[in-house]
Length: 206
Image 1 (tube, rainbow, N blue to C red):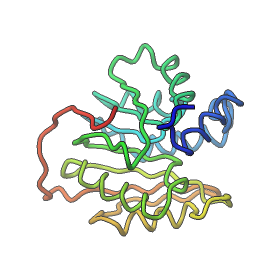
Image 2 (image 1 turned 135 degrees about the vertical axis):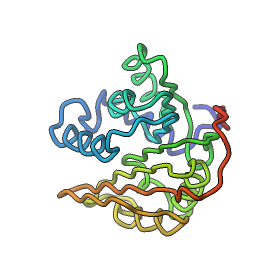
Image 3 (image 1 turned 60 degrees about the vertical axis):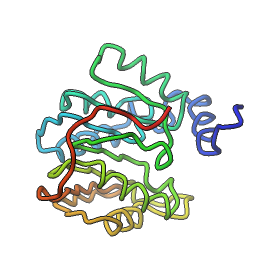
């Protein structure tokens, strides 16, 4: 194991090494319905530059791809990204990047960010950092979509608390809350009057 590999990366690499599809992304009716709700929450918008945090094996990424001119998808697990690259090899406008947020935050700006089933794996300070980095990475009028499991977990922070922390850590406007039995989808926007630069298509990590 590389000395630079984080404990989180090692955990998820081991998980994806032991199981091809540890959360049944491909086969679960629950996961399929949740992805459909996630796509619906985008309201058919087409993004110039969309960023997905925590893309795993690329199942949601493949469904987001038609809605973006350019899609940057990140994950902490090299094992998961290996499978995502196979799945998305024909999608030339999709770039997959090994990164651990908030430390390896990609350079924006973006007009859309999707954070699905990621936040409750982070610490309180990391969630705050992610919120602030996402806000500053978004173009005015940009959308940030959160998807979070709300059932019990073994982490210090649950999905509901993760959303609360995220929403209170930057000057977000929340314009959608959709709650299902075991997950919630929250859509935040950045005020269209906020001043932000032009698209520069760079990333800030290795």
